[in-house]
Image 1 (cartoon, rainbow, N blue to C red):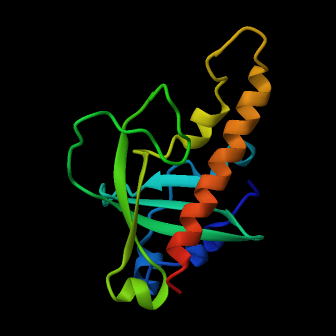
Image 2 (image 1 turned 135 degrees about the vertical axis):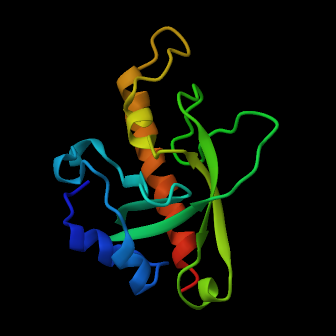
Length: 163
């Protein structure tokens, strides 16, 4: 992912008001991020624990989405819809995002299961378990990274379809 400035991040949100954009609390380590290890930037708001943000490349530009964690419990441990990590190394929660534009103002939302603290890029970059002898682990890792990027873009486009 290409490095972003604070202004780039704030301007990228497609489903947030000007006031919400101005109130975004950037991650503490924003100035020291390893942008090459990220497929998208995701973090939870330090002041509003139920709010999360994701910003990433979509269609030649950058798209930011504000998400809200939905309360509720599942019977079984859910899998992240973005990184699809089968080892489940971290909590996965249900997030809701207002759609962009008129649809969002009318209350339409898009939901997704995602890693609670958006650890997806790190999960996708871990070597996958060896499914059979001779399996190309590096190829498997690259496939997981590509799928993560595609899943993120697909979600972002569904949120943006309301504009």
